[in-house]
Structures are given as structure tokens and as C-alpha cells.
Image (cartoon, rainbow, N blue to C red; front, top):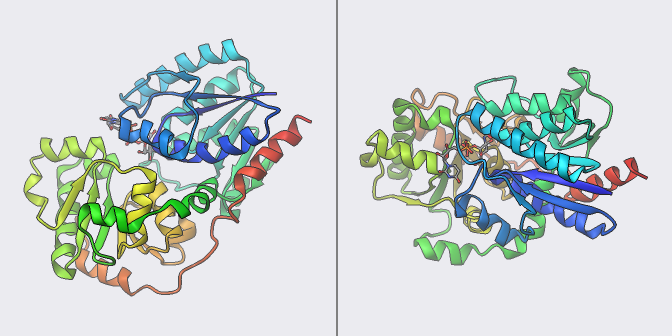
Length: 361
Ligand code: UD1
């Protein structure tokens, strides 16, 4: 049996790392790995392949950056050619990026069955381009691997009940597999940090970075937290955010308590997260990873993983210009009662591979 995985952006490399290993263990299958090229800088892409032990992709499509239409269409044209050449029996897609959607449309129209890993999350809010990508992908997938029962019920509400499995989250599998490699002391030492004396903040979404007022409010809020609670702010900066800081002339908001660095690899980020006081993020991926590290957090977006926000462990900050950041930080630091086991048992990838195998036996 020949299956083909398509990836392109950071969270997909992380998901693919676990599924890839489980597929390789099943050595009766031919597995072809395709990288769309949506993320191309070394620290946005190559670094993850190296540290997570993902084999070099068999194909690199070189799609790169662009508007949603340009990126999705370019990936579709290039990926279709590849499907014609390789003729896989199944296409594996991950998450909800433009790469995911491009792969789904191509495969569905070529009548190649699609397996969608991380099916079923919903925000019901189209401010997130990912919402469009995941809804469309779910509706044309054949096997839908959901992380939680909430995701399964979201799919059922849309009439999708066939081929749906609650396997748990492959990112949790990876976290458990990699946690022995985390080295908080080493990573803190590199940045001169002390346990519980810093916050990690990652901000990359366009609705936060592409408005000067909103981005300025977030940086001002982080600055206020750092002074009020004597916390360093570690700020790994996504390339888009870096461009906006200089374009909007926001450098003056980056104070001495802020440690601005390049985007971090998986092990670096997870190592630092272990000893952070709390996190501030607009990343769905980092929201879950910080939850697994037991960290409370402020989510700078209208919605996040509802499984976590419903418990109050992470607090939503939907309007960064309107909130009192010091008070929000104070509130989150008071939270107790870590909600355990929200995303499965850490064996999602094995279940996924077994279900795919059954379908073709
Ligand atoms: C994409 C995904 C998002 C995911 C995120 C992880 C979509 C719609 N969004 O968002 O779901 O959470 O990846 O990071 O698919 N850039 C570089 N170098 C790179 C990559 C990007 O400079 O290697 C810059 C470019 O200016 C680009 C911008 O970042 O235009 C945005 O990149 P893009 O892949 O379009 O979206 P992300 O915000 O990274």
C-alpha cells in the first residue's frame, strides 16, 4: 500500500513526526512525504525535521509565502502533478493550514481517499483562515481522526459521522516521547533566566500583528506585566511579526525585560516552557503544548482550544486593546486545579495507523 503525507507549516511537521514514525514501524507500507514549502526559513521548517527525526521529504514543492489564494492555488497545481505521478492509495493531511486545504481539494477531485489528522475542531469564526480550511477539509475527508469527543460531536452536528474516530492528539504522543529530552536548565542558562521568573509570549496571527494598534496594545500589555510582576518576557518572533515591528516602528515597546529571539525549535521551546510562570500566545499549537507542560496562559484570540478554555486554565483575551493586562495576568496566576487528560492517552498515532491498515485489509 502506498500512502502520501503532505505537510508545509510548523504545526504539521510536529504532527507528522509522530505519524511518520508509526507508519515506518508498519514497514509493509510505502510512505511518501511531501513538503509544500509554505514554511521555508530554516528555523520555521528544517530545524523541526532535524530535531524530530523526520526523514527528508521525498518532494519539496517550493510554494512559499503569498496571499491565501496564491499560496493555496500554487500548492494545488503542484500537488496535483505529484498525485498524478505517484498515484497513492491514500493522502494523509494534518491540521488546518492552506497546505491542508490544497491537498484536500486535489485528492478529493482525483478520488483518492483522504485521512485527516486533527479533524473536528471548530471556532465558528471565520476570522481564522484555519476555520475555513478545516471545515472544508473535514467535509471531503474519508477518515477523520479527532483529538477529543467535542471534536467528534462538532463533526456530527455537520452530519459527518462515517469514518470518524476519536484517537486523541498526536501532538500529545510527541510531547510524551520527547519530554525526556527537554533541558530547561540549559535553555534558561542561554537566556539568563530563572525558574518562574519569566513568561513565554508567541504572537503571530495576522489579526494581532497586522493592525498597528492591536500589536502595540499587545506589546504594551506584555511590558506592563513584566514591570508589575518583575518577570522577563521571552518573545520568539515569527517572521511576519518581526516585519511588522519595524514597519509600524514599534521597537520602543520592546523594553529591557523582553528577550526577543528567533522562532524556537520544538525542544528549545518546550524546555523553556517547563519553568515559565505562564504563557501568552495566539497559537493553537502552543496553547496545547503549554497545557501539557502544566502552564496557565493568556490566549490573545477570540477562541482557542475550547477543551482547555472551558476549564478556565487558559484565559481568552479577545480584545487586547481593551483589557487590563496586569489584572489578566494576576487572575491567571491565581488559577489552580490543573485539568488532566483532555487530549487522549498518548497513543493516537498507533491508533491512526491501525485504522488506516484495517481500511485497506
Ligand atoms: C501558518 C498557518 C497557521 C499556523 C502557522 C504556524 C495558514 C492559513 N496558516 O500561518 O495555521 O498556525 O502557519 O506558524 O496556513 N514567513 C517567512 N518565512 C517562513 C514562513 C513565513 O518569512 O518560513 C512570513 C512571510 O512573510 C509570510 C508570513 O510569514 O507571508 C506568514 O506565513 P504563512 O505561512 O502564510 O502563515 P503563518 O502565519 O505562518
